[in-house]
Length: 196
Image (tube, rainbow, N blue to C red; front, top):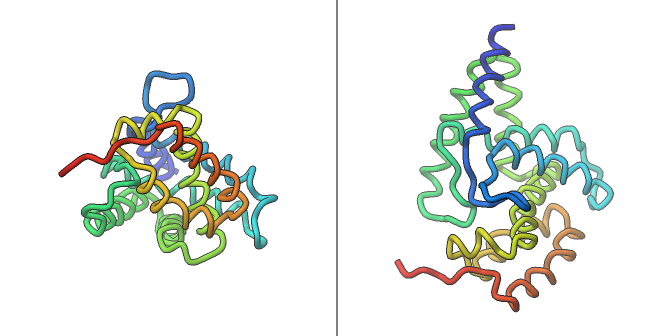
């Protein structure tokens, strides 16, 4: 029992990991725990739009564990592509440390869920990716491009990073947001590319 308690208290640190997007109507930035909860709810709400039968409980578990490594690594905005291999290696070490607080069986189960999400090779993992990629997009559309503008994220960069995962995981969601992205571009809601 103490191992479970230690693990859950370690997860509390995810509430202190600040992301780059603001919750609607608030001046502060969201944290990774809020993000994980919200995308789990988004995925559960999107089930009628899945193109194949999916195990939504598995999807929700993936979404609840997918960012736990940020306790050790912090959050990096999704649109950053530099040093990706190094970040993924650091995330793996963090997951092994954090899940290692548990007994072997639950630790292995959580690590397997994280790996499944990372590999995006199952219908459930692709559906989970669609929700994960869509939530910051939806917040930015509702917040007049807040994090895109603040971080110099262009329309082209957004589309190149999110179109395929959303389209592959939930095509109906992509069809819905694709036009909204174009309208946001027309309104100037994206950042300007920064020179290196």
